[in-house]
Image (cartoon, rainbow, N blue to C red; front, side, top):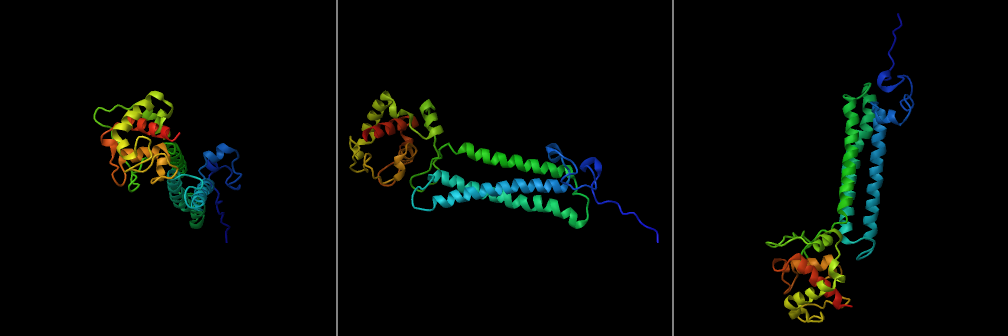
Length: 272
């Protein structure tokens, strides 16, 4: 019986280097990995990236668990906790679970299991890896950039509080600074404090008294508060703008955002 030559199962030399060499050393150098069309190398790169995503998702989960270790604030505030929880879920589902099985395991093992030299459309296969990596970076950078921007919530049910400008209201530098930082920039402005006092006397002193000790409304100068969020400028803005339980009506329909910040700055000065 005549001998039959069986072709090597390695890949074509023009795209994978030596067809008989191990895929790890068929071509050397970082560039050979970046531009590789070898399904096993692409599978390993998927494995590396998804494993990194798994590590990041695990860190987010650890921070969430640490925050729940005790009542109240442990290591992060409520807003940051919500972001970490969202990041953990999005990272684990979209950056690890979904791409890891077809991307890492499927790329590496499936062609070998069916006896194929490679996957169909190897260049498209490599491009999918880079699209995945770009998407992962966009996700993480977008959430990170938004982390410093305060998200306003209603004091009544913690639903998102929509901030609308009054007709003719202009966005002042102070309001923009408050949006960016969550801190009232008027607290050290003497003129703003004076104007804040006039606004406070007009709209607030009937319920909270001139010294802020409270009558119908709660005290604004004690260390204990009916609404814990009032300890931050952002939280007090939410209460004044959106209203609260009892007789506290939403002032966002009567006062501009700049005026509310002046009132808050004056209220802060009462406690000194």
